[in-house]
Image 1 (cartoon, rainbow, N blue to C red):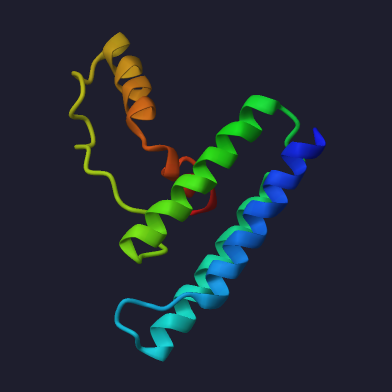
Image 2: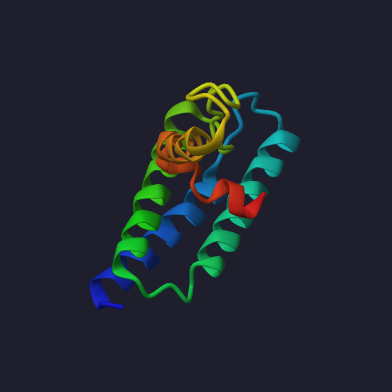
Length: 122
């Protein structure tokens, strides 16, 4: 891994942990704030450790983009949890044979970048 990539990743990790320390829930209730802070820190720790052994530059770039997107969306909406997507379960194509494979491919392409790792950790 290149030194600049390593620095960028460590910078992102520190940024997420700083956000977790200073996070305030929208309701401003201390209990909810603490739950959301814990969620942010644990989610970051889980995902960064899960991807620690990654060596492919393209995969690393996608993970960095996902992290940046999740940070920006979380800060904008003041909600640390991933935003849901509203695609009907089988709404992109018919459910037979070859079209089912294309349905799965289209659903995978339609997933927003900030939800790529959500299925892996859930």
